[in-house]
Image (cartoon, rainbow, N blue to C red; front, side, top):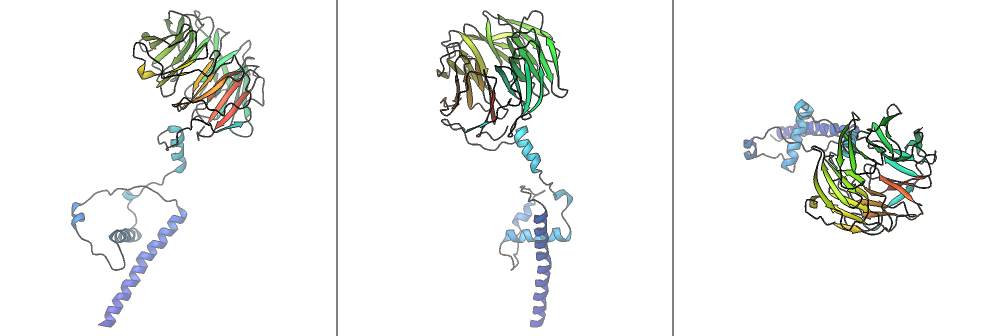
Length: 432
């Protein structure tokens, strides 16, 4: 009887080693050749009776969970994993692309510190050319690629690839008798819109063909002193600096409507959803237009403004900034603009000369305020504390003409009156 029991024990041990050790070696080989798939898989069905049925744990296994795992491994070793139970392996590169470009999954990031900005200076963007003109009035980042467009008073427009030790020139072209004052990429990045306040035309540059095309403005518009492309790429708002704003269809290039104001218009900005247009009159009157019906839906006066200069909207659409000829910047919450006399959320008085440029970064954590009328008159404001970053600028930037941020705020570009387009890396933001 003892011999018979001994044989049974030996046979059970042999089978256990055959099944369980084989499974362990097999799974070890799989783990060496393939990445672990960390997916929480749910059972295809749940039988209520299974929850009530007790399981007699075999002596070699210490826990019920381990026993269930052993049974599963045994089944897969002998039979194989059913096709319906197989899970496709994750593609880390695809996931990374979705997280950074598609914005489908966002990792938690720390908020931007309010006192010191982590910043690193990179080589000048246009060090290879430096012929765009003495005044660099436009520095624009491509929405999808690490490419920057630089334009200036000489009418030369250049595109550069950035991010390395050297910023390589990709293409350059000259617009005769032009003084480039503004430029914007289309939302998909296929075209760049370039305008001059001295010309009766604007340029549409096709990046795929590397071809510029001049488009005449409607006859009623003398020059493009104001030129703005809507965020959705459907509308162009332009003006010669008088009391009318002209809305042009970006695709057909046709004039859609002329919007009449009480005073001359100094600056305009589209809402983030392209449904409204904010027009800033010379006397501080702000008119909000509904572009679906081309009618005025709100008028109010910028608090304390004597002479209007610049207006800007945050990418999230929650903040509206106005800059005056006296160097004062007011910041409003757009949700409070419905009141009869909106009051600013914050008033910034760090500059004393005319505000010539206002830009929010993509996350609405930084607001740049600039005056080209005084050397080094550039301040970066932290939002929502509205503190000025004390460590920038350290060097003399001379007279700053324009400031811009890359799509995910990883880079900042600055153009000045010495023909330089500076590039800075904002270390807090991880992506271009």
